[in-house]
Image (cartoon, rainbow, N blue to C red):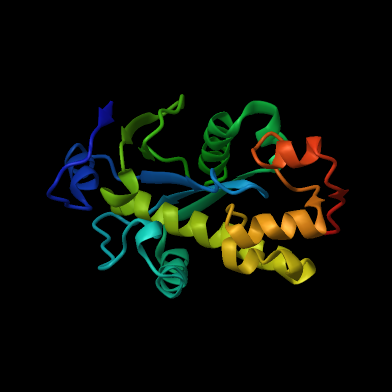
Length: 218
């Protein structure tokens, strides 16, 4: 089932409808990191308690970093189960970012300690052995998907902060791998790290032009 965005938003609409059918273990899944030039795509899957509400929680892109960290801690404490799926840059280059995003989502679902009865998915369809609902703009329409988006975003951002400590000259703490002007200038000056997505432009062009590739030390 595919659902499109509605003007009036009840972030528990889908959860309540499923609860009324006797479905209690509802998972929300979302991914982050399609656009960055480097690093993994990260997905998270979250099962919240029945009837759970968290005022102010929304799509992670609409929240400040401080708010995301705040909700991350609350969700981590209150969730029935959380699973995280990570697909690295080499796999992204092998199968493309769309397929890698799906793979990360499936990993996140499989990494739950409790099997869900129904999965709410942000936008893309997934082939699972449980019922699913794919919701366009789901991270802004479902509290459970919004919770997953926050877990995924904070998890990936913290990976970029760790990378920034090793390679501060690239500015990962600021741009998180996205192609800002400062980031592109750093690539020209310092070379391409081995955790970049080589099939992405302008990385592929830089490689063709002979820009140095540096091995990442983890």
